[in-house]
Image 1 (spheres, rainbow, N blue to C red):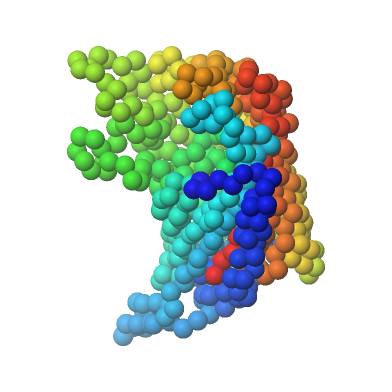
Image 2 (cartoon, rainbow, N blue to C red; image 1 turned 120 degrees about the horizontal axis):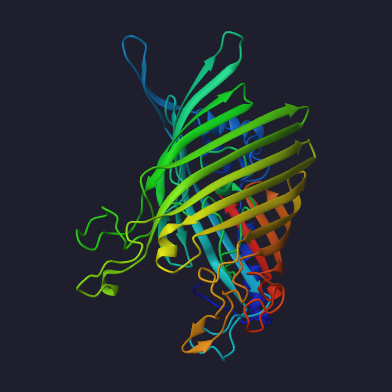
Length: 487
């Protein structure tokens, strides 16, 4: 974060409100929301309850390859009538802007002088700016691609990207069938329900927060570091089955010997060995204004832990314990979603549970973990919107795991020789439980203002004095005032 504003001053509150005022001044009508609205000629509420939560139509639009089109095209047809080019005359582009004001329950110690006073709040203006391109590329081929500027690292990076081809068929009994393939860079990006990690709850979390110790690999731990194809089928707009694999695809890193991007070696952290299989099954039943989905998904990752710079190895190079071994993660998840979309009221209930079994061959050989561990993740939430203008939600998020004194060290973090704690666990256990509440105001469908609050019941294994240095779980409570708009 580039600018820190002292908490409880007139400047702090003034900066936060200025974010809201700017957003209101720069809002546009709903029809100007991202590329798909421009392509289809429909307002965003056809495919979204409120972005990014999809409706049934939005799910079908995505699975069928972003093909629905209601605009002018530059077309070329062969003599035999085959369409060879269908290019939109107006690029399907959009700009997403996020800004936010964050306040922690208690400031973390100063990063240089641990005993000195530190701020507990800050503003990010902007927090993120994303350029999106999406929609039809050619018949049966479409894409959603995102490049994001992040103010925290002052960097541009490739965000969620999904390029897919899809073909529609009608079976002899008049039942529709879609077959397709998605090439993407984040496991679950291809999925069309908002119960999976890539576009799941909480949709817009704060970037300034105290991180917990761990979570399942499938929860975006490898996002943008892998890429691969996922093949899928959708039967009768109800049964969705997908399977594919991912391979290592580190971005912005080079091999220290060759000077090129590949081959990957131990200087890279958590590099996937070979193909990492991924699968997804979901069934949706629609009745009246309701849509009920139940499903399961999962993946298997074999990772080289790596992260060792060449400077850390002193010749002559002795054999390194664990060299060539991998840490293996098996993630299996279950999810459900019940959605009601009325003329005035919209209500969604979601729940996801992930269990990850870890076989830590490489880390245990290096003396960095138990031979086996496990991590679980539970997320459940209810979201309500009135007229897609006033909204509220409440969610419960719980991460649990096995006690591991080697991986989750009980010793406090040390800064300049002074123990400060904060991110460690005195019990060597990662259990973290939080309640998330939000209030929303969306005066237009492409502008959303939210007030989000995270309350931690337990953090890194305990409610009180979890780090052994006197910090309690609720000291990490986070208040997040956010604004998001698209144009």
